[in-house]
Image (cartoon, rainbow, N blue to C red; front, side, top):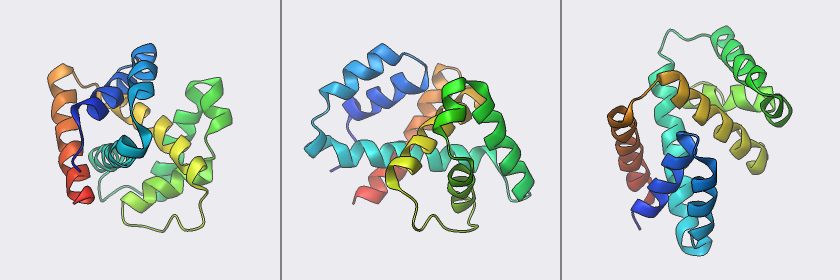
Length: 145
């Protein structure tokens, strides 16, 4: 089943910082039906955001520095993000290393924080965010078929 507009709207609200709207839209998702699509969209957006932010010249120190920066942005981020896991998630997208034996909940929490930070750092206007999410949706739809 492809990604729905409802799933896309929930993620978009999260990425632009409309947290109450995100909570409302997220609560309206029927998790047994929408969960796989929403998770695929979120993961595809993370993949796309990392790919856009980091290039082939990115080294381990760049990733460590970025994760440290994201963790320092808010008190909760510093507490909630396991730096080693976050670094492994980014490096996995870059084709280096693996995320084997990583607790799924810990990984999802790190991806949530990192995705928001990557999107904020990209500085998208509405059209740019729509284009970004359109690419993520295409990737997610491919993964779901």
